[in-house]
Length: 134
Image (cartoon, rainbow, N blue to C red; front, side):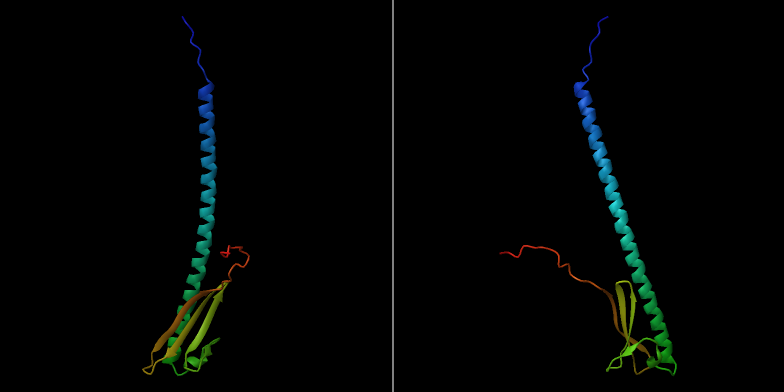
């Protein structure tokens, strides 16, 4: 019986390259999943804050509707400002987000929403060193 030697050099090199590639892909997949999780948490916090502000705004509209139906009028609502046109403004804030609601009474005893604006405080990044074209 004749013994044929098996050359393991090219096979070992191929297995080493495959294991390095699989390790690299595994690390990249983990890093991508971690970044996606962080982005999803940030988005969930933003949605929670915005929906909370929307709910508070809806509660304010309910109170304003009851005030218009009653004899108190919109002037008796707490923490509101009235401008010269008779529009009653209320601002709700949470973190860096805010909801600005403006309502005005109609002559028929109903309520008209003048403004419903979601706002976020934002300041441009001044640290960027961009090429100005010269």
